[in-house]
Image (cartoon, rainbow, N blue to C red):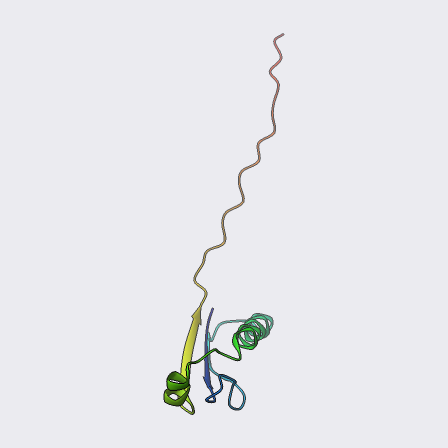
Length: 90
């Protein structure tokens, strides 16, 4: 799943307006899209206000930033569970 979000900061480190999703993986299901959109927006909410120095705040204010979230991880295969067999001698 890939999702790209575009947003802009104000001079004080808060978001200017609302973040906008600009790209999502085409073959994702609607449920996956909602889960990833929510995760991206929650990540942005946890990061604001961004602690900019006055110089950085002035330089970045009003400039659109674009971040791509790329989830390429593969889910680990479940470990094989073997039943402990006891051997019987006849």
